[in-house]
Amino acid sequence: MAIDPAVVGTELPATHLVIDAGRLRFFAKAIGEADPVYTDEQAAKDAGYPALPAPPTFLFSIELERPDPFDWVSGLGIDLRHVLHGEQRFTYHGQLYAGDEVVAAPKIVDTYTKKGGALGFVVKETTVTRGDELVAELRSVLVVRNPEAAR
Image (cartoon, rainbow, N blue to C red; front, side):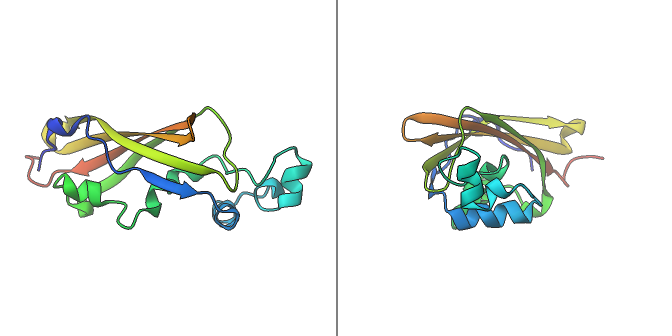
């Protein structure tokens, strides 16, 4: 199934989250981050941080906090069995810490096809704000295999 280009501009549900220190520790351990500033509050303070800082790729997980984080994909008529995460990019404007309240607001910004329609792409950009401050911008690309396309 081809992805309807009319979805470009669609704003997806925002995720509101208070960044939890335990979640940051768990994430740091899961990615193999050995620097104690990400797991030990005293080490973070000794390094000049007000609290545990969020590891650089932590923001990827914010939207996964929603009850059904992939409902927007199935809402586009895309079969999740044909989806591959193709790209993730982060642009940081500030640092996030344990205790920060953030909002991640995603929007579909592009769709395109390659290989004669056999592969579809959905580009999503997400802004992450803390109050009125833009903290980060995320860009992700989903690759969708179209089994109906001629090979």
